Length: 137
Image 1 (spheres, rainbow, N blue to C red):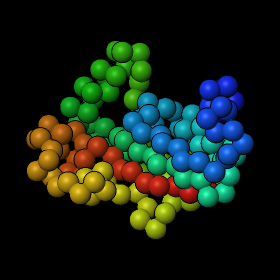
Image 2 (image 1 turned 90 degrees about the vertical axis):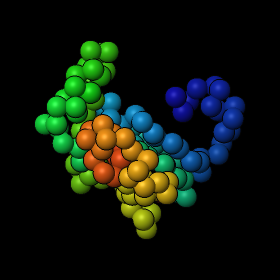
Image 3 (image 1 turned 135 degrees about the vertical axis):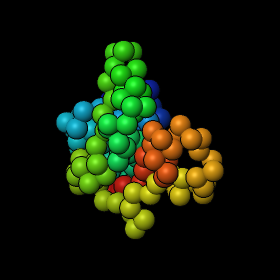
Image 4 (image 1 turned 60 degrees about the vertical axis):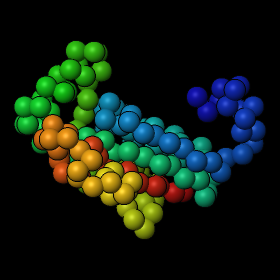
């Protein structure tokens, strides 16, 4: 993707950029996440930033609603993956977390638990659907 003519036309020789990887990692295997982040890290110049969403991190994989949700993903031909936050951080490779680290999406965006319905809380937990962070090179 980074070598596509459209991307090169926009970026030219600039490599100090911001990336956004949001709503995607939950659908990637561990190896795919670490490979993708390694490619982006190697391509980017120092000072680049990556906003990332660790969706599905820390959820109860045995919760019947979670099982149903992930079965639905699989029926559409796209399995979902859940992992611990520690595991996800390990997949980030050489990218450095900013001083806030991974923050629950509710806290990051200034919402409170009342923003979630009961089913949301049952599936994702009281902190919402995952965590977000800024990673830098």
